[in-house]
Image (tube, rainbow, N blue to C red; front, side, top):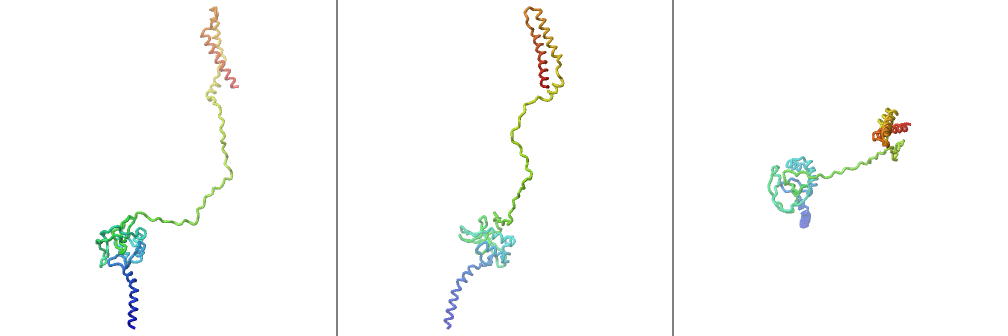
Length: 246
């Protein structure tokens, strides 16, 4: 009977060993910032919001509020691995609860949470910071706003009851140029007297007649011809203006 109990106990222990091993593997070691292991930045953000001890540790180290830290971890950290081994400066929690700094050798392939510029800032398995301050935000994730259900109505312009007049596109008639008003006025106000036009003609005839009596051959003198032309031109101009006026 006792042998049977021992067999059952051994079987139960063998069944519970894998569960215990996985729980121990996820349990953080002493000196870790987190109280339980986190595999993604989202899990770390949730832990900061739910565990006041974790929030207080990160807030004291980075100098930020727990809400700002949770937002930063969720939006601006990514899970990655170290490409080469090296000694890194890290921070841990001492036995008295204070934060201390020391150098830790990390192998290539170690999982870390890195910022947008690729700089590792937190060791994933223990949550211990690898920097004193968080890098500045390079880019912000786009924020999408839901479109309003009420569609914008188009403005309708009402038709005019009275149609606008249509402007003719036919070419305008070009009138011939007219004389300036001042020329017409001067012509009307100061007409040429017929007496003045006859005087040069009579003088020209007298010159021509005197020349014909003194010589046998009638050859008009240049001065006589000039007087005839001077007397005839005003007479012609006076008659032309009277015809236009009538």
